[in-house]
Image (cartoon, rainbow, N blue to C red):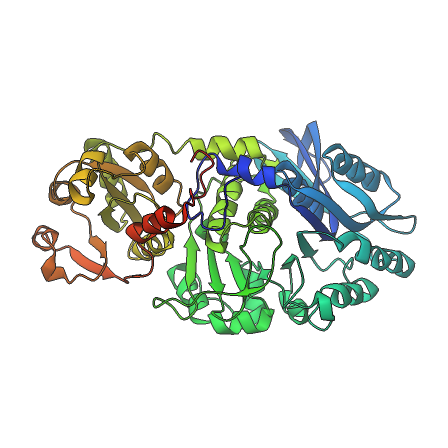
Length: 533
């Protein structure tokens, strides 16, 4: 079976391949039952200026930690769920839906003195009008003691553990003590240097779990602000501000990697160069992250493909689930984050609390197969972007066997503007440049892989010796090139500068090149990570 540890790009075969791994994932946290009541509004009530919603449909779905578990199961993981619910109708319905999804709920404590948290949203015409929350004022102490006693068995043999701490109390007191005892840094065989599982923390206050030294923490913008103890700036200044505080975020969270989720702005991933990072196949172990000449702590960015928000909920749970699945199965961290972004993009296009399945994610990634635009189509798109005041960045290359150098370079290029256009050398031009045995992947496959990267907005294929005709047609604000060049060395520079554009030379990553990857494959006989090899 093909290895995943060097897979740098997304492809339509990847969701199915990850599902085949079927990692055992234990999800521990606060449960919620989400309700979505939708109806029509034709009048206002007599008692107050409030609309009367005639309810026509009632939908219910597991939320919070339960939604994370549902997403993991839908994408192929073998899921154990650990939580505390009430012996009420909401708790019973929650357990029924989890069991129907094939999730092991034998470690869920049902307590007669517990109220299962419910969040009912009332909507009409696609607009949420009201949310009704019903939650317990406190959690029964004896219920938490029973839950704590389940922890050793629930985490035993797991490939990954996800802690979903939303401040409702399921991870407080004895449960917290049990988690620190069995997963924390002072437990001998279970210490971060040797524990044989991935630990992911998704918490409203991730700093409270710094002592656990998790492999990954996934704060949103508000939670990152809480970690830093400062308010984040808005708009375009937010991402650079977060990047500038990488070391503080890593220290405050205690994590080997921090993935800050930014809703419509995508995500930022920060790693310590000496911190823990998983990504090997088979059993998961903490190993040092590779140092690179590009960044002391490499920053990886994804960009969301947003939809009008309306009623969508739970995309963050989907993101955490997909990230955990991919990382536990052995994908590199950056590829895992790209995979998680793609899964979140699937669910934000649907109303309500929903899950992303393996088949849905496969179809989503398959949709990039025919996305390469002709030069004329691309020019129309670029004109529209320019009318919206957006800054256009163009780069080009063969991008034959995608590797980490490519993805870092394209992330850097995206950050030079608002819209990134990637022009791929056609198969014939690659042969002229690289020799008769190239390209390894045909232009349609190369275009699909590049288009699936969240940092890329448009892909086109050109067949000319240089992209100068395309530059003259599109007139990008920035022409980006990676490598050990200077602007004076590039034939394209004169064309860009003729209309006032800028040439930007991005960081060179010498240890990551397609030629080096192919030489390694030939010397070792390793067929790579595509199961079709």
